[in-house]
Each structure stands twice: as C-alpha cells, then as structure tokens.
Image 1 (tube, rainbow, N blue to C red):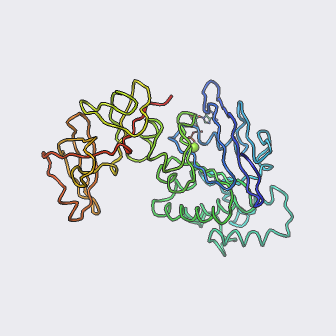
Image 2: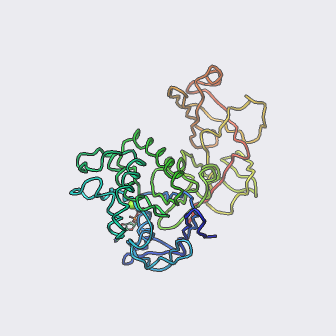
Length: 363
Ligand code: ADP
Ligand code: MG
C-alpha cells in the first residue's frame, strides 16, 4: 500500500515500467513498491538498467510504458524540479565554478524558494554532512569524500521526501566508502526519507538496505530482505551475485531430494522443476562432519587440494568425490586447527537440509 504518512514520508510505486532505446530493451516491465521511509537498493551488474530506472524516477528518462507514483500522485510526466526528489548522481555532477554553498543551495534556486530561509537551511545541511564552515570553499579544493558530501547536501537541503542515489560511493576508496555507508545509514534514520539506492556492490547493498531488488538484464530477479537474498536465493543469477556461493549441478529426484554425482542430498525446501538445477553452497554453511554428533545426512566427502592461512581463518579447498570444487573456512583457534587436514588428505563436511538450497536459472 502506498501512503503518505504524517511524518511527510512517502512511498513510491513503480508500475510495469519499460524503456526501449531503439530496439534495445533496457527495462522490461519492472514493478516495485517502496514503503514510506524504506531504504531499498537496486543491485545489478553494469548495463542491467539501474541508471535507466533511476532516470525514470527522477524524471530525466521518459518510460516507453508504465507509470511512477509518488504517494498518490502519478508523476510519470512531471518535470524533475517539480518531483520533490533529491538526487545524488554517480559522478556527483557538481558545478565546478560555484562555491560549496552555491552548489548546495542550487535546488532552492531552481525551486524559487524564498531567499529568507536559505542561510539557515544551508548551515543546517552543512552540519548534517559534517562540512560546517565550508560554504565558501571552491569545489576544486575538496577531496573526493568531501565532494560526495556536497552532492549529498544538495540532494537533501530542500527536504525531499524521496532521495535517489546512483552509486554515490563508487569513486571513493574502500575505507572512506565504509565510513560513508555508516554515515548514510545514520542520515537515513535522521531524515526519515525514503531512499532508493543504486549499486553494483553486493556487500554495500546487503549492509545498508531494508530490501534489495536484484536487477538482471532489465528485469528484477528477486526483491527481498538482505537475509533472504543471501540464505534463500531464488535463482542461479541471484545466488552467484550475492555472497561467494559455489554452484554445483544436481539432478532432481523428488520434491526434497537431489543427486550430486552419486550422493543424494535432502533439502528442507521444495526443489524446483527445471532441467538446470544447482546446489548453492556458501562456505559458512559447511560444517566439518562428526564434530557435533549432528545428523549424518548430506555428507560431502572430498580431498583437500589447498589450505590458505588468512589470519582469522584458514581457507580450505576441497575436490569432492562426487565432482566439483568447494571451499570453506576454519577458525584459527585451537579447535579449528584440530579439524584441519593437509593437502591430499580426505575430509567430510555436512550441509544441513535447511542450508541445502537448490536453484534454477532464471529467465
Ligand atoms: P546500469 O546503470 O545498470 O549500468 P544503464 O541503465 O545505464 O545500466 O543502461 C542499461 C542499458 O541501456 C545498457 O546496455 C546501456 O548501454 C543502454 N542505454 C542506456 N542509456 C542509453 C541511451 N541513452 N541510448 C541507448 N542505450 C542506452
Ligand atoms: Mg549506472
């Protein structure tokens, strides 16, 4: 349900939006309901249609069909400056000849808001992005992280009910990116605004979002919470894109059993009907067999091919007797080292039926 709640937050509804460029279908009938105040990420590889979708939301791209609602209003044909949407572009798109303050107050000018309140708004917004005292600086004098904050300040100064961000942190180095992720989450809580955030970085999407929409060739493969996407991927595309899953081809026996080579595996989840099925294995779900006295179903036996010491853990690579390579980690604790075997030796791992996820290719 799309509603405009008392705090001024607003939901967004993308209804069957499509976009073709000539004969190329960049977006194919995508729909998404974003709740008021929700932080939703659009995650997908380069060229999957993320920026096109954001352009349609922001009013820079006209959809070939479909519509966009902000609260109860159909804004499909509204020009960008009438949309009450703040946007942080991928390259920041700051005006190099203007000062920090002039850049940030630009949306107030574009919206012809009364000048009386500007100064106070500017000071408050600069504080919010921790750039107090920077109003008169030139853009060229700023670091990448500071420019990013200016772009953010410009997007929020007019208190939009929806903020769109297109890979806003991709130009920053890893450390600054992680700091900014925390700051953006803090800002989201403080503003209470609805945020749609585009990224190709799965870790970033999982860390920051209430829900993530996985985009693949102009369509959504799955829209879910980070936890669901990681633990219960709906297709091989999602499984490969999220986390570091290994996919091994399996054959369906019945609703809850597959064959991996000659080894039958039980899944607590219903196995889809499809010719191409894969067992999805996340390293952290594998347990060394015999350690806990737990069930003896779903045993994977193989030969250790390599062990890599990585500080807090040791990565172990295993060639399965049933075919395929998998890897998992042991902690470098005393207990972990007791379980470690040398290359050439055999190991047996358990995969709990709850963690036995079988996926099919999507469209
Ligand atoms: P993403 O942001 O996920 O990298 P885009 O939305 O930018 O993807 O692009 C999706 C596809 O549409 C790409 O194949 C791209 O080449 C194509 N595309 C984007 N904009 C245009 C345009 N103005 N004209 C023609 N093709 C375009
Ligand atoms: Mg893009």
